[in-house]
Amino acid sequence: MKFNLTKAINVWYCWGIVYLSVFLASSCLAGTEQPFGLNAVSWKLTPSLYNETKGHPASDVNLRGNVDDHVFWLGYYQRGSEFQQTRVGYERQFSLPIGKLVLSGQNASGGFWGGSSNLELSVSPESQFFGLLGLGRTNLKDYYNLNFDPNDAITVGGGYRSNPSTTLSAFQVRDDRLSTDQHVTHFVWRSQITKAQRWTVDFFHRSGRAEFGDPVYSGTGLSLTYDNMPWFVRLAWDPKASFTSSDMTRLAIGTRF
Image (cartoon, rainbow, N blue to C red):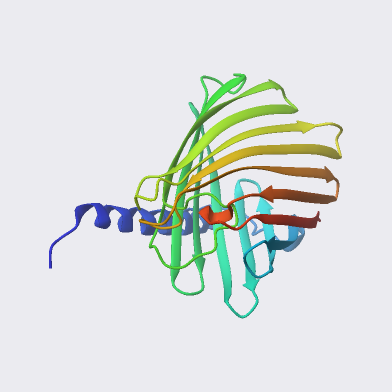
């Protein structure tokens, strides 16, 4: 059997990120003088509904917890009797002299494993401008990606903080592994209006094939999120969802506690 170096690197990267995330979580928690309790966790519960013009409706519920620089989650996605999947994940953020690094790993039923690394580059913590670089890899098992960007991809972009409460960013997520020409370009505005209220606007354009050899689909969509602590609502129009001919409406109403 012929050895495929590229495939081997992708597999080792995926597993490396997952194992590194678990190792870092264990090391950091083991080094804590007193283990944290559930009352130290900031929770976020997000039930979501997905309605497609050429597909069955779907639903998802995700429970996410934050402790300092640690993030972990448990979720369940269901599209009728067609597809169901449970997932768990862990994310860790590190402060660096040149910005911050975020490593994450995720496992889902059906044998899926995935990992990603994302770097925010800045010359100093007070810098208004920053760069964005990212890389994601999976073991290519079936997985429903709820951020609707390619999983096995690179991310390149940048942003500007006009003040501590307002951020503008532009970045592109592009498939660099499966020859689908998938790419999604995002223009995101976030603004903290008051201590309890925040707006997030994500204007995006996607283009590409669902799989190699399929037709190319392109569409431009919009996602709006309004936070009024502890509640939040997100509404999105996503044409040509998942690089198919189907258009999707997404609605999420959740709470933090």
